[in-house]
Image (cartoon, rainbow, N blue to C red; front, side):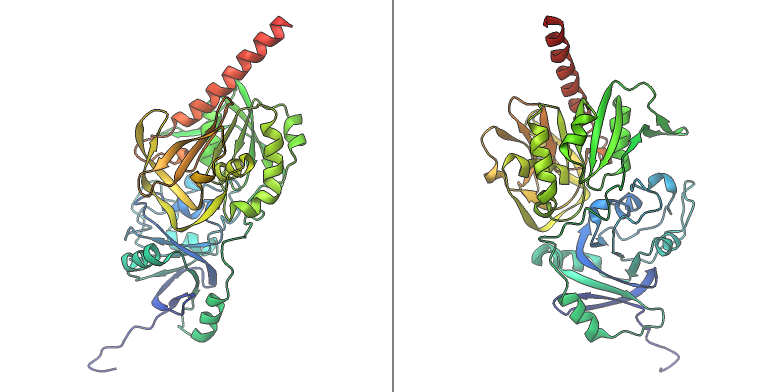
Length: 399
């Protein structure tokens, strides 16, 4: 100490797999977190991001500098089970969390992170860290928070270096539902809150690989009675529920690993000509079931500002993305067409099966950036069910 100045002591460390140590100020839960480090470019929706089960096993770096300024509230949580952890391991911020300044806030983000056992670090040059991830890929990392600043740096380096790759990891079991349940809540309306679907026209079975609440809300709002089933549910049990349509949800991890048990069920469902709609991991699961391949991306797509072109309409939509794996378009078999592609890097963002009511997209149409550009996909799914109902009714009449 000299002239009354004391160098501040780091209370949190972010240690990358290559041994890089980044110092900062701890926030959230006083704990240690380990996982794959990614970045998210969204300017809003941090609570939805932190409760998205698709982020299981990851530490999220927010590129937007001010996170937490509108607080948190129970209405914006995306995990179906309000009490469950989404699987997010940690959070990396540029600026310290400020006091909430929004009338909907019921809690300070820091207190919320503590309650959900999510560790965080602030005071980071998140732009530099993002550039590093963009150039070198998503590294494994350990985030440690100790208010006293006591760290075994060498042990943290060894732990970070020894973490398994996301390749080959099935992260669905911790985030899928343990039992079947029904869903009838619809979307949120200003000054009214959430609604309820009390006159559904179609029955949809949603296979839960880590589903988000707003996906289920939009299915219900589109006229569907939704039954959510665990990821490991056999095809025979799903068919026995006599669904008009089947939804394959989003979720975390390596799709090839989850596909070990999910793909055989989807293949059986495809034989029944029931309309199928998939999002994110569900898109990848469908692609694998149809004979395509998936591959790990360098830095993935994580944000609410990604341009995607729909080749079926010729329109470009601004969408929300969250994935570290993608379908290899060159592996798409005959009869499977590419319907959407990213205008950032050209990667596949959608497929459809020729002559069948089956399609899926990589992005999140329920997330509503820009505004609600992709909600038409839920209408497309319902139209497929309506068309099948019409065909079935004609066949029954002719019989």
